[in-house]
Amino acid sequence: MQFLKKDEAKTASSKAKGDAGEDEALAYLQARGLRLLQRNYRTPGRGGGEIDLIVQSADGTVVFVEVRKRSRTAHGGAAASIGFQKQRRIIFAAQHYLMTWRRMPPVRFDVVSIEAAGPQWLQAAFDAG
Image (cartoon, rainbow, N blue to C red; front, side, top):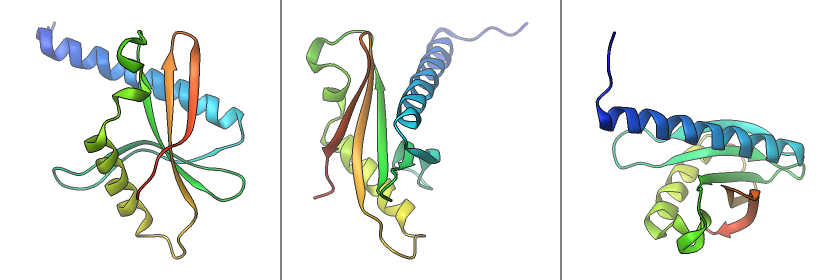
């Protein structure tokens, strides 16, 4: 039998909670008509970015979604935890993802925060400008 160290167990538990939050956010968005393009997109190499969900709306807008799960709303809740540096990494990853597209689609950066009251969808939470 193999035992995990305390930090490893915490990381595994955090990963499972994060995955569950992404599952809930994806189901929420799909119920509202968005189509999944990619999940957990990562840029190659160190220092890149990662996007939890990339979905597309019926009008063709590609939506890059950051999912945050928090049990408490202190300090502004889940959405408030996405600072400037995290936004820049998401934007970098979005630019990398879009390099393979022939035509630049309309894009948007949303946040789905999973909180005790249920999912909260913040459309156009930040922009690339």
